[in-house]
Image (cartoon, rainbow, N blue to C red; front, side, top):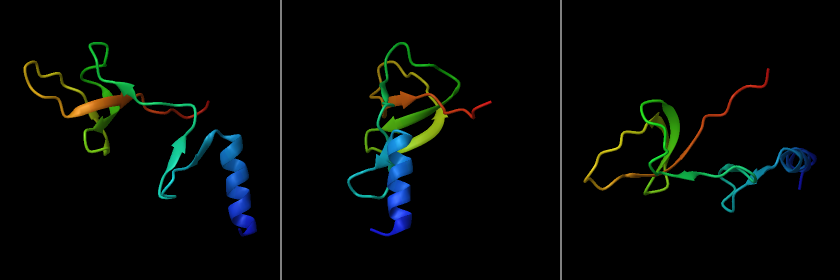
Length: 81
């Protein structure tokens, strides 16, 4: 492991995120997707996770009597003041 890799690992550990098992994405260790339900915000920007595991920024629209593509949602992160 190079010094740069070691430094990245140290920073990731302190910030509660890590590389996933494929080492292709960084994931939070204390932040989780929320299942779509009747409390899911409608008509505002949120992160959405579809059936195939692909995330998207968008607005959730509930369509009664239709199979829903979106399975999970998450609020957007914000900048520290």
